[in-house]
Image (cartoon, rainbow, N blue to C red; front, side, top):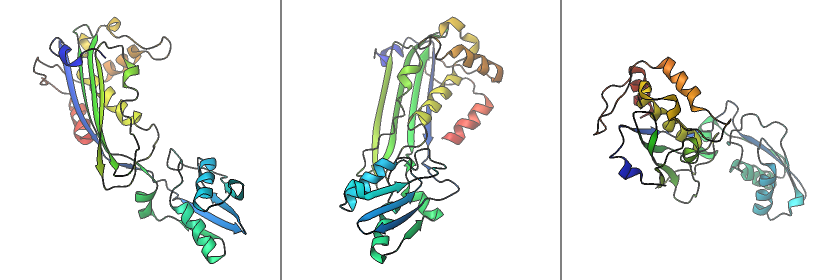
Amino acid sequence: MGDPRRRAVDRALQARLYVRHPNETHNPLETHAATAIWDGPNLTLYESAQGVVNLRGVLAQMFGLPVENVRVVTKFVGSGFGGKLFPWTHCPLAAAAARQVGSPVRLVLSRKMMFHTVGHRPRTQQRVRIGATREGKLVSLRHDYIYQTSMLDAHHEDCGEATPFHYSVPNLRVTFGRAKRNIGAGADMRGPGAVPGLYVLMTSEVFIPLNDIATEGYECGPPGEYDERLEMVVCEEHKTELVDFNAAGSPKGVAASTRRQLSRAA
């Protein structure tokens, strides 16, 4: 939308931020487990699952059973956050083992297995470039990101999902890329994509000098849903040193606390 690159020449204040987030793994205190019981052609699986209907359909397809012959029982989900959203490999393995030995089988994942078999938030690398007038009006926003994915998977870690909805900016660009690697498939984790994306977007605001921002300079989304002025007040109370950028985009000063946070994130 608009021309973010051309408006870069006109903006009085500009900020550029690069952040890398490592993989985040689903790994609650209680590891995943499944108990499979066969009764003739009927399969009952006890599993802590967020999607019992989906798991039921997958098991029926894998074992060539009518859907009505498969029963998935989930009494307590516990820590889910996306880690129990999909059918993982330990479920059909428990069912296959139970059918092979002719008795109920419980399969409990070890802590080491949890790092490989129940999904993760992919590693991401993001770059945000923003431009604003001295009055605090955003005129340009560019959000580019790339994430890791497996060679065969189509999971999309949408770090730019929320970017177009937070600010009224006339020049906007959001791009993404995938880095195919020989790794396990990524999966949804609490706030998939939006969490690392919004972290970088909100952090980039620190680089705009708050003393130069007029309250009326920020335009918000739909009335009553979000008011950026409230966030500005919080930032004003916690700032320690302002950041300004010259025409070349080099920082003249960075708050020590912000520098430490960004160095850890990178």
